Length: 59
Image (cartoon, rainbow, N blue to C red; front, side, top):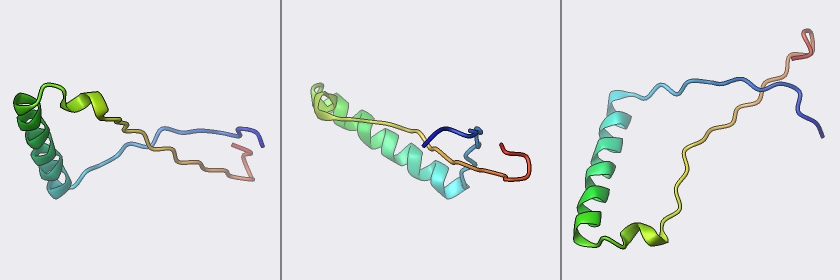
């Protein structure tokens, strides 16, 4: 298997999704204030991979 082509695809969040992210961030900040070692056991990531292949352009 080989890589054919990769494109960056922007994520567009709805207002509700943005509000959910803000709420989660506030909760995490509160947890850190109460327990400074909270993130020692956390693994995070925010990456999305989307692959597209067009046989006509071979990209």
